[in-house]
Length: 358
Image (cartoon, rainbow, N blue to C red):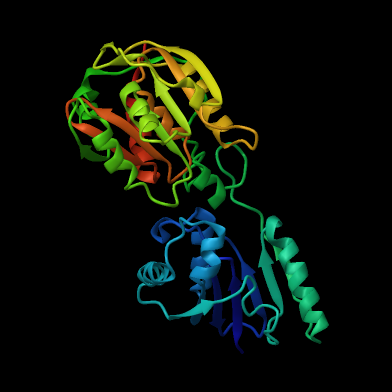
């Protein structure tokens, strides 16, 4: 007796063979475009179940299809390599997937298909195709999502949007919304180090470093955020309007004698944030700025801080979608560029947790 699973998904399709029964199950679930070594809890469970079988065929979406979903998806060659590393010594083979459904509509030996509530319509469409071709429809088994801490499903889209990690933990927690925290002296030396790639340039000509930085911005970046009056102004003078600019009228803790061209921004927000602190007002305004910048009727936002914006990148990275480019000035050195990724979010979360509520 031979038991075959066909695991289908937008980024990968799996065909597994076992000796338990003659049933053949088509199984659909989401494969995150990021590190396969850290799959969602639900996906790990599904893959482990798959590898209880004797053999697994893995059909991986072609670059042509994958890049229409999200330009940040790794190349098929990289995904092949990651899957191979994750599967280690298990019995599997890799195949090229050229369409959304893979072999599901045509596998005459299949009997079942597993899906999530969101992909149920795909299963119905597959069954309509099978019936039209004279094949038996697949019995649909609908699997519920693993829920995040906020009770909503864990999904790759929510991870990309920057609201949760792959285990369902929220990057911004309820306690962050209503308390002011103070930077401990233990973080002083760490925060003075560039948190990203430094683009050096003369202090009196910040455009030199800015131009070098913007030339290095990845094409897939969904958002550009600039922190600091000099940085925002240099970007504007170079012809770049950041999606969000955060300023405080200061540079190197003295009054900045320049003037930001506010006409470049469609939105303007102000909030208090004393030096050495992170306030719920700054958190709220940063969130509102990002929301407006990404909204259909929105656009670039200038967030003016009454106090100091030096620590605002911590909130920015925790709130921003993955792939966001954050630029800020490094005194007497140049401009630092940091791309928001899961490691950046984790580091920012650890920093925020080290702050003190007084």
